[in-house]
Amino acid sequence: MTASPSSSDRRSSNVREPFSTARDCAWNLIQLLHGADDLGQFASDAAPHIRKLLERPDLLVLGVDRATNHGDVASAYLYYDYDFHIVIGSHPKAGATIPVHDHGTWEILAVYRGELEHTLYRQVGDIDTPGYADLEVVENRLLGPMDVVAALPPAAEIHGFTTTRPDTHVVVVVGGHFKPIRRYFQPDTKTYVERHEKSWRGAIR
Image 1 (cartoon, one colour):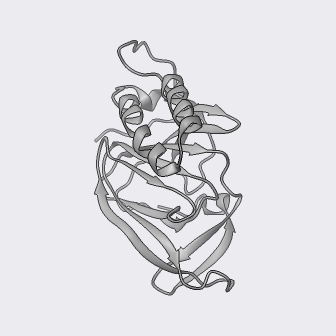
Image 2 (cartoon, helix red, strand yellow):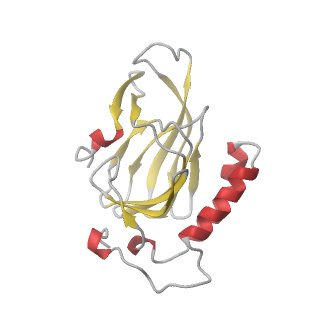
């Protein structure tokens, strides 16, 4: 079993072409986004470019460390500008659950290594009552290496996942900025709480 990299392990790599760089991927996705008629088409067209990035064997030792949002796991920026970023996150344990949450923007998630169970939701019915949210499952499936899924507003930007294998690593592409105060949902009770995204650090295993 390969351990997740520590901060000191992240360093530049000697890997060269024909592998895509994070900058190549970001440039291609930004061009697609500017020319897209809708986010759904953009996400579909973006997937091959993200998979090209996932072909690199060295993503775990690239990037600039970042403070993760949803637990004490390794996380790094592979690409960052004010309106667009690509992140890699490492989950060392099987059974680690990222709580069901919204974003306030779009997000595309891809599995680099390992496996996770991912559920995408949409909110239905009453959307005005504070603390109440009736969620409908849009999709629930196991994702493995090279699988890509998008959480897109306004209809289906709510999701959560649980790792099903140790040493699961995901690449996340985000447009814009997450809301600092997110909604965290309990689908079984049709409720949610509002919490700062950083409040989950140290709480997720």
